[in-house]
Picture: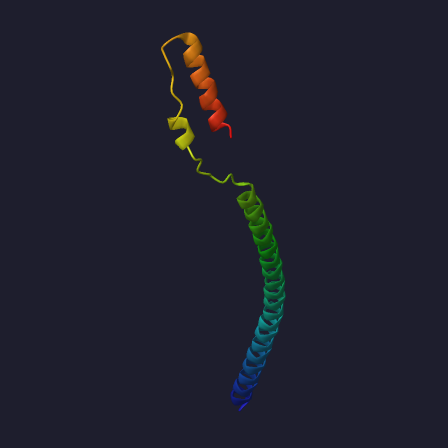
Length: 109
């Protein structure tokens, strides 16, 4: 009879210890879950800040690209038909100099 009482007591103690271990495990997982939720919230806030910074930088880049585009030099086509009409009369230095002067005057217009 005392052995049967001991066995019943052992089972009760084992079950109580098992419940206590499970309760401690549950408390640990709840604590870890709340910590992970806080980390997730912080990461979400960091991601939102990074997205805002990215949008701001994209706007600044677009503004710079527009300013750069407005500074771009436009190629223009000049009428060079007047240059064809310039004739150098002879091969003397003065005649060639006059011809080049006329050429530069026409190109400078």
